[in-house]
Amino acid sequence: MSVARSDELFTPDPTKPTAEDRMAELNLSLSPEIDYDLDSMFPKTEGWGWKSQMKKKAKLIQQIEPELLDCLHEGERVLYVAKGVRYSFVEFYFMGLWASMINHTQFVLTNLRVLMIHCNSRGKAKRTFWMLYYSQIEKFKGTWNGMLNLKLKDGKKLSFSGFSKSDRKEMPTIFQQALDRYRESGFDPTTSQSLENLCSYCKDQVPAQTHTCDNCGATYWTPTQLAWRSFVFPSWGDFLMGHTSIAVLEMFGGIITWTTLLIGLQRWAETGNTVPLVVALFAFVIAHSIDAIITVKIAKKGLHPRTMPDPA
Ligand SMILES: [Zn+2]
Image (cartoon, rainbow, N blue to C red; front, side, top):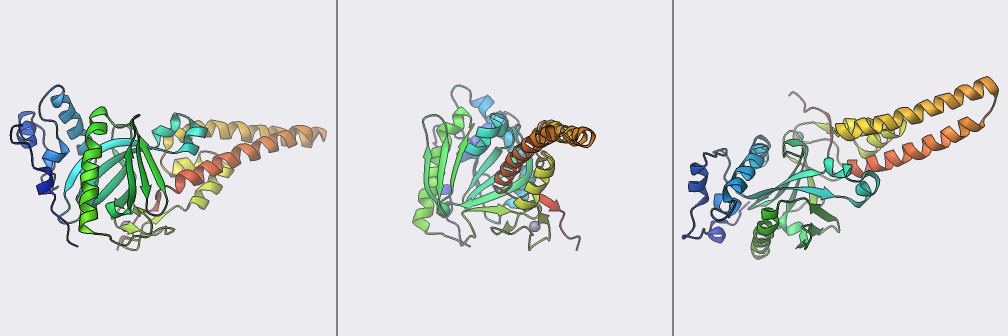
């Protein structure tokens, strides 16, 4: 696989201090095993706020370095890293601001593709990984309110918000340059869907609708498996997906609906009155169905590990 070198595009301005010198000044270091294009990653090396910006960004990158090492191919060069929040209308509708808690994503723009790593609010990598070849991006747009919208070749749309002010300023340029370069080179690898899932363990591609990694044997929950669990007891699916804080909240809801149902059953057994039971059952089915539907929506977005890779 030949990849156009990116060096020529990001020639640093000779009148500005280089990112490398500035990092040394601040005593910041990144893994020497990863090929970083420091000048495109840290375009701001002078002026107001460069120091704090650089420190913050370096810290963010350090949070995903072990995973990045696993993800990157030979000759793959990191051009930019930023953290945002993936936006989903359904989740925000039902969960409000809580939805952003489970949608933090680190974006890694390389000379080959865009890697996305699910992370916590501090940027620490979680277990779900995606990748997107530039050739799969039909349209890319940064909006006035700081959203980043992507329209993908397979018709899917992705929206992200929550980028820092400097990222909002710098990222579109780097993105556009990478896209333009890809259009010129015509590099268009085949994929099973625009936003490909990567195995949580070996970081190999796991094709659409597949829940076993061919390379290492790790298995993943299917959305249906998770939805049924969430229907039986709200929060179960979210616990399995590792969304613990949201799951704890849902668990209280589940305790209430189950208790109400059991009280209804008891009344019916004792008095023969079916009204409390019917009301409780109605509420139970509605609430648990909503939870199951949201679980499916969330689960479909990426892979959630079920069993570890084969030891062999
Ligand atoms: Zn694997």
